Image 1 (tube, helix red, strand yellow):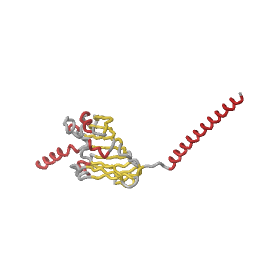
Image 2: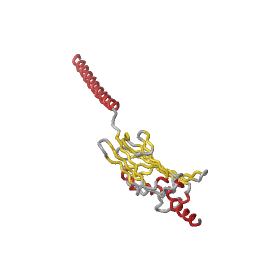
Image 3: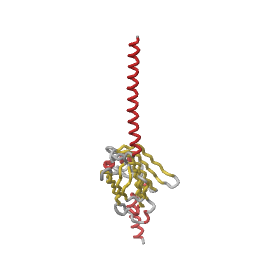
Image 4: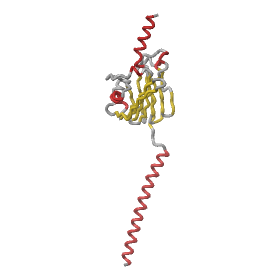
Length: 232
């Protein structure tokens, strides 16, 4: 019995770094640029409050900024707080990026592969690999990992767990991540609607008409001045 308790204790210690709730929300543009919010929180925050240089899930502002900084990636805001009622530590990071295909150039995403590349004409293919964790046990059901994406167009195919127009959500309990998950979607990029085309055409026609009116008025004014001069 003592051996069983000891084994369970060791397993728990090994898995603590993964025992965290994680939510990543991304707004993507058609060129691969966009904005992202990363929010993670845990009730075992004491294990994450050190200043270790390689601390990935840190609750220290200086370390967080270092983790999320990289070429083409700009950190806009960092919020860290703790709820006294349940002793849960939270970290919220808001950032913008030039190309999501290169998001792994920062420390936090160095082991993450995200692709948003050209597919068929007028389409983009999205892929993200979610690494496996020491899950698989019901004791990890209380922890969730969620990836929310707002895509710049109509969703053609996907394997998301939830879908709402151009918003896709992949949400898993930590116990479900005993193996690698692949998030995939095919997006048909937005084009000008026929109504928008009509508005643009009408705008151009209006400019042309105004330009013609100005020319006509100018000619009439010039003719009137010439006639007045002749009379004198």
